[in-house]
Length: 124
Image (cartoon, rainbow, N blue to C red; front, top):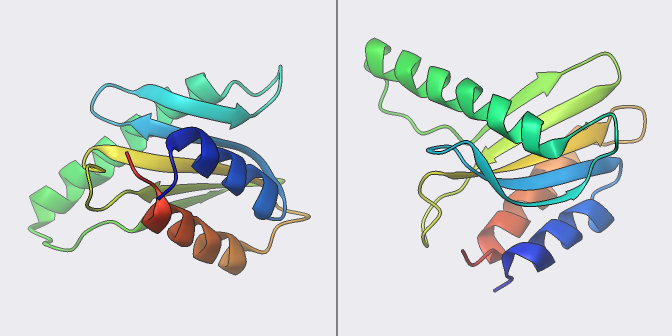
């Protein structure tokens, strides 16, 4: 079991192309922990904005009567991937991991696999 800081550090150092990572509470929009980012890319602002993405998708699924659970959401930009992985079980309700990847250096399939493993080991 890894604590938040350890899990974020593992994501940033072990996932090829990762430039930023955050653990986010989508009920409040607050980042519970961040690592990486830059002066021009504020992870706290991105975390707050991505809570709206998750809330909107959940509302849409509810209106459609979909009973499935969201595993992750991928947003592709011209030079980045933004991966949002909702946490399941062990106190993860209402939380997601947010990962920013440099698309030129990242392997998206491996990043999703590694983020899932980090989620499984995370103790919140």
